[in-house]
Each structure stands twice: as structure tokens, then as C-alpha cells.
Image (cartoon, rainbow, N blue to C red; front, side, top):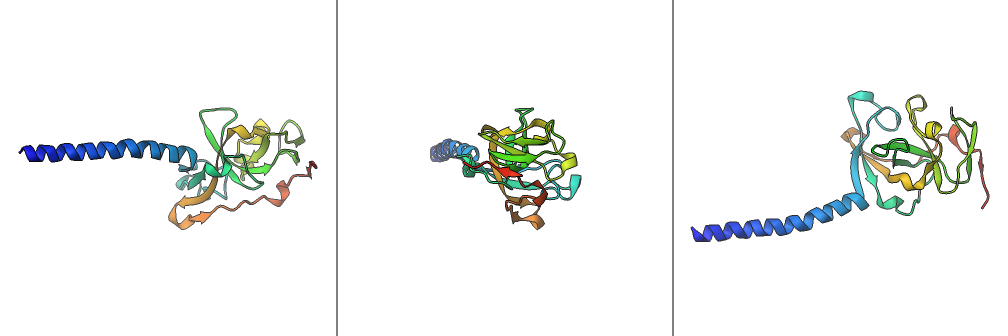
Length: 175
């Protein structure tokens, strides 16, 4: 009987040691390297959620790849909503700092993206709350780059940077 109690204590002690190592490592990984997220809404159709409300895509969000704010035109990124800091949104990078972009319904017809900012839009223009509503977005609000669709299985794929030809910047300021 005493032997089984000692065995039980040993298992509990080993479990707790593993738990107290695994939890911080997991939290650090999810915060700094990558995590998965379900994409809701129609703003990124047809690239994400092409089936509408019936199915939500699950994407891999790579935090590590944007740690130096290294994004390019066409990347799909997750960012903190400029209007609601409690919410994360997913959009496509259309223009980088110094670019001049023709807007779609913004208060100015043309906007020069300021230093330290990007211009983001959803692929489904009529159903997207994006830079055309709130303007250029600070790079500090970037959360991650969406790199792969993980779910549903028939949509497994790497997400390639793609900029619609009609959304290319009009002019790039020379540095």
C-alpha cells in the first residue's frame, strides 16, 4: 500500500514538473512564433471563406515573420482593429509607406501612406471594414501574417502574396 502511494506521488510530481515547463513554453510559442485562428466574415472572400457562412477557414498566423514589420504588398495580415482594440481583423496589404493609393470611398480620393503605416483592404470591397473606412494603419497594430489555410482539408494551401492589378499603388516615393 505504501509503495502505491509513493508511486502516485512520483507520477503527480513528474506531471507537475512537465506542466510547469510546458505551459510557459506553449504560451511563449503561441505569442511569439505562430498560432491558428478561425476567419469569420465575408471581407476576404474569395481568398478566405469562399463558402460564406457555411464554412470558416482556419489559418496559420505567423508572428515571427513580422517581428521587424517586414510586410510586402499582397500579404494577408492579422492586425488589431484601429476602431476596436479588443478585435483582430484580417486584411490584405495594398500599399506600404510612401506609396500613393487611389482609395475606394475614403474621405480623400488619393492618399500617400505615411511613414510607419500601411494601407489594408479586404478582397470583398463591398463587405469590408478596412483602410477605406479608417485610413492608413500603423505598423504597430500588426499582429501576424497569414501563411497557410489549415482547415477545411480540401482547402489546405500556402497563401501567396497577391495584389489585384487594379489595386496597385499609383506612385512609389523615391527614397
